[in-house]
Length: 137
View (cartoon, rainbow, N blue to C red):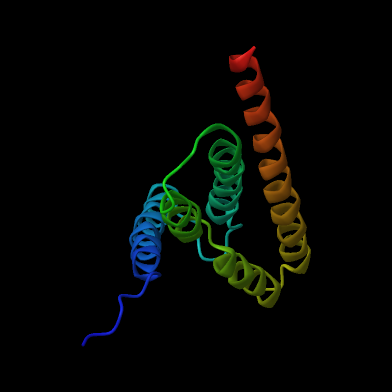
């Protein structure tokens, strides 16, 4: 008699697949908009802010407007957007700026990223709810 199938198997599979897609998209962004070794990490900043805005839109849509399949959230939210955004690179970028003698730039980047990412999520949630309310009116 075999073991029962793991009910989390499909979730793990879609998160992994989504992560590959998101990481490839992030890599593509770095190829399209490369950051010089000693330069300010604009690409990482933009990727994280865009990813956070998309998370805001996505969460409103699947929570308030659309009854999504149970694997959509782990695939897109955790996998694709988790692979696309890169807060580990953000931390390394701060370290590189500080160790390179650009402490003010590193601290500015630290604060700017958090502020911009939170603003992007909040703004996207607000705008998406407004659009959905307008469409239902």
